[in-house]
Image (spheres, rainbow over the protein chains, first blue to last red):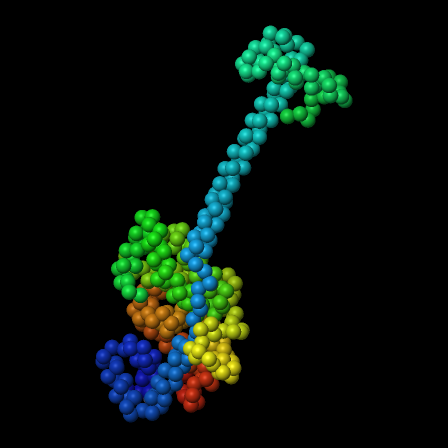
Amino acid sequence: MECRAAKRLIPAFLDGELGPDKEELLSGHLASCCSCRAEMVALKRTMDIVGACPDLEPAFTLADIRARAAERQTQRGWFLLAPRWATALGVAVAIFVGTVGGIGLQAVHQSSTHSPAVSRAVSDILGLGASDDPLANLTVASASEPSTTPGNGGTEGRP
Amino acid sequence: MSLSPNADAQLMLTFQRGDESAFAALFERYCTRVLNTAYHFLGDKDAAQDVAQDVFVKIYTSPKAYRPDAPFSTWLYRVIANACFDELRKCKRSSIIVPEETAESVPDPAPSPEAQAESNELAREVRAALASLPENQRIAVVLQRYEGLSYRQIADVLNMRLPAVESLLFRAKHTLRARLSSYVEGDDLTPAAEVATE
Ligand SMILES: [Zn+2]
């Protein structure tokens, strides 16, 4: 065996990874070649130095892993839900504005025409007393506000 | 370390069915190894602590990623290796070498200041030498030297053929040998290193 081939086998030899045939060949060469023996010793020392590098102790616990996992899942959850939530919120706001605004406008339009009978019927349905007449209250409120625009009844900006 | 590889796989499968205590057992068993694989690869304490936690978080949140066709430890080292490669690419931390108080656990219980300084310097040099290796060579050395994996196991982790792993380790060890020659007693760097460069 030539030195070049022998040196190629030295790392695996030191790691106990050479098959018996190659190991026998290399052993024969090492017995008679001091250059390859020196190489083997130097590599062994080098890898001993590398292996002696100190270990770290974990600075985290199982609880930290669970907390980090929960955090990641929450982030992922928000990320996935964000578009749906935004849509849902937009729809809800639109319905609210539409409904309440609609009632308000309707009340203004009807304020001069709705009869006490209608008012009472609405109050009955909503389970309110006569003094809690919602339509009457709306009418009173709109009437008491300063009207800046004729015909608008001062209801601009109300929900 | 008293559990068999089969027991690890069994624990992982138990965790896949929702038993958290199985995850706790795996964490207990592999925590230090995951951390130190990352540490010896990255050479940076904070990055290693972070990557190790991320590895466990990945396992915790995606347990189904493990399939029992490979030993649990093979799969785990693959997850660690990928996390380390990602970290290198993300932060270019390959050049970060722990600059001070490297020795967390010094073998000598009461080292002299000189011995301590020498040990720190040597540890820094070893990290610098490891950091100079290409990532595949580096992970192969870490798995072999620090984790005690066989060449066959390393081949499985890295999804390589056995001769490729032999070649990786040969080149890696000769680079380390050349870089650390001044710390090796009586080493005048014989021509062996030339072989590695061919
Ligand atoms: Zn020779």
